[in-house]
Length: 359
Image (cartoon, rainbow, N blue to C red; front, top):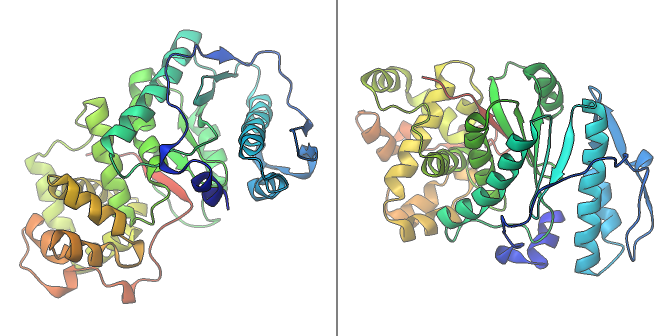
């Protein structure tokens, strides 16, 4: 419903992007018990907030239902931002007195970062949204209301306690450097570090946010995010293109592993397969994107249900299996192409989990 409303009331034009507004700290504001908005009944938060590991979790579907009580787009936009801020003020209270909520025109930051670093981070968020939109020309969609939200936890223990809400109760999961959580109110989370360490997380996760309206296979979503991150930050990431990395690729991938890649399951691995999945996604997207117009048509038509195979054939005249074989120096073979009939289901979770990519 929220995606529909955002598309209806702004579409791809999105909200204004400006870095000129001075960030302000929301000091002295107490977490509200009620949200009041023009044309809407009061929203009593005690009925719509729960706790997970001590952190507030808003029932965003109920907030969306509340918004439907008015047909005014302006009222809906105002009420949604009020709900975002109310949730973050409750979150600030849970994190402790060292945390501040700071706000710019299109972004909000909850952290204990020093004032100068926090201001620079907010400005970077605003600038990066514009750069991601420009880099993903014709693909990015910026919501017409709501703000980009970044929560910076002080330590990994707090971060993992919070994100555990978005993982299954059982299983083994890869370590994470940051996450884009698209579960009602989309937001980014990461762990406190210097600004240079946070910047790649912001660029990567903001790319996921701008692509959230497309039913992309996970490998394509991650390949776009990695390449956009590297282009914006000017870094090489964890993809040095060394002989050692090539050796790992050649030794790891086989027909079974490549099916995990196409379905998205390999991105959940806790061994080298996790890092190699991100790198293979980067390589394939880099190969495709040299012809941007054809690549754009491919992305817009790609679907997770077949890993984008039909769109690749239609728009790029490429067989994904044959391309994977060429990149991995294997003889072309049918088992290397996507075989969705053998997958349990394509991996397109509501939460985009990004793992530490180390060599």
